Image (tube, rainbow, N blue to C red; front, side, top):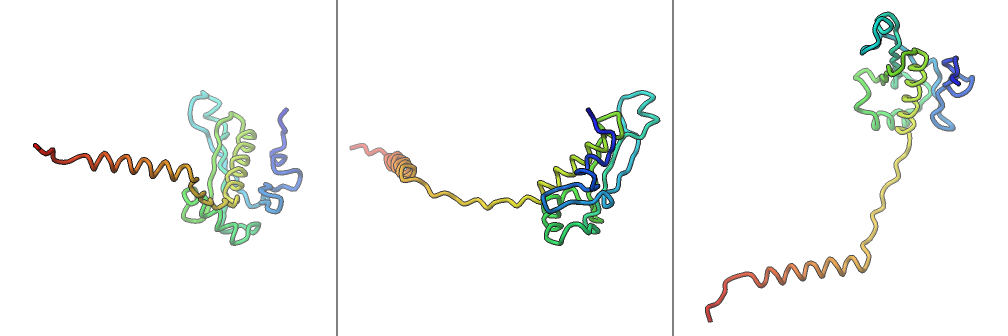
Length: 154
């Protein structure tokens, strides 16, 4: 069963998109734009504005601190326009409400991934067996190359 209230997708009744346990973006910082969706659909698509664009002004956001904004800027640098806004759209459904739910879910997933701190990779040391195999291959190759050369006529 689908919820009919668009703000119910925003975690509970608080009107926020909850990204982490401590970080939530209020619905007031999100701007929704509606337009006609392209593609097949006949008369319905030509008269109903079902496409939904979510616009989030990262630079003007009061709910994120500077370090979080910087993390998002680094992770989403190709998705942020020159004025510091993130634009996400959804037009899969014929329902404006479903597209609105979809665009909020995309936004939530995108920002959660951007705010996740990536662990540094600790390079592992080669095992004793792998070092021995590497040296054996080098010795074999050295032997092959050493046997190359001029053939004496003696």
